[in-house]
Image (cartoon, rainbow, N blue to C red; front, side, top):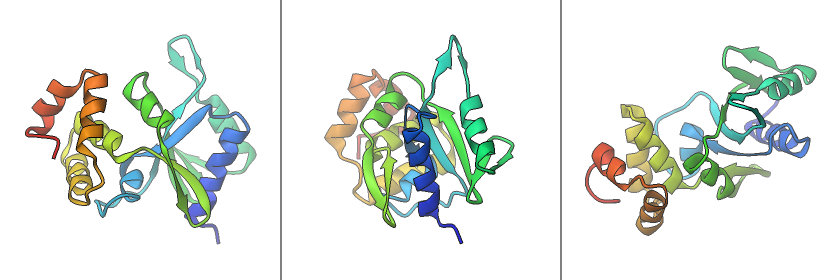
Length: 171
């Protein structure tokens, strides 16, 4: 029976084969590497994807999946029966989060995971109760370094928006 580690190995193969330039795990699955948080049913893969003009071309990802016999279900590819959603990283914050991802171990599989400070910013900016709870969990677990978070917010001109959406200090 396949495991989550098999999914992470498959993602590494995608990168090695040039299907993805680079990627990092974000979303709820990433938060689970750092803190107890709300459950999630899929893996969000933020990826640097080849673009043609203004359109993001995901055809290489879907072609790769079909060649391996993975099922496509709406916006997800079921890799070893796990729903995986590929999200084209936006320039700036999301691209930097990928470039500075931490390589963590999951049952022998190396996994690039967004650092908790980037996750917190992305969650808060996206909004919603579930994401706010995830952010709170990261702070409560002591996973977020305040000075690193402040530097990210300043570098990307997001300090005022952070304060507006999150309020208070960088706990």
